[in-house]
Image (cartoon, rainbow, N blue to C red; front, side):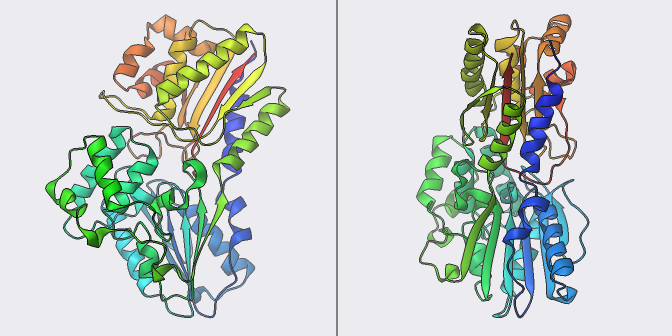
Length: 427
């Protein structure tokens, strides 16, 4: 059988390239104001977005460097060199002290914006964890514990962010409130959430929030999260309600999406079609438990194989893992591991599942895997080494499984984030 790994990797790379800040940001940047451009960026693409903004204002528009200031808070290992905008590398998915300081400095810069200044907010996935500013009465350690519990609960990202927004001084529209004296607030965002919901991207720091404190309390109860009493009190305090549409903070605020998961999936689909595959496009907004989605996709692949079809089953979105074991991994690796168990006796099938930011779960290091690949060589190594996918699934230890087979996807930080890309090629 022809080695399909180069094609799988090319499909993944095409999806990432379609959403890179160097490609998507500049056409959406606004003219320079009379005063300063104050750039506030957060997320896994924040460093690259800040650098692209610098090139536009300093090199293309020849703006006086003194009129460009800012801070970009990104995940550890995702920083890039900048000239005027300070880059802070912070924790993700669990916040750390660097994110705490970055958020405090960000809020202070927003408050300093005057009537001649443009507040330029650049958002990408990961911003929720990068910008950590607990509400009064909740300690940093307590906020970290809530984040850990949410990440392990299996809750969809929208629900995770609902809780985060009501425990934060920067999320849920509060950054716009801090910067409301600016001439304008322009938010340019790379979407990493299903259906591109603006209030969910980086927990919506500059847009109205449709969720409520009651919603946040219901999520804590639904997933039986263990939280401190201080957190429970904060979620009962009306002062911690997020900003709603009639808030004056939004009078001069604009929000624009500059990259969507659908665009990246389209780029991936085109490559598969160009390679001669009939494509089954399952959409860019899939959610659900990783192993359950894998089971549905494996059934499609086996059906196509039985019918002698040459197809590519493709999807985006963001899957979840309810963590019961002690292992390492993330939703893309768990999806691939479940596929490996279901397809292990089938020839002519190869698959890739990867997060477009370059990190799938992991410990917050730049070397974390983005996902994994499987094909006939994977199945052969499983057999030779006596590896049982089900045992690794039970311990949520997909990383160890794919370390043993040599099938981890390791692109490193991609400097963008438009959710996951999953491809199953059936010969």
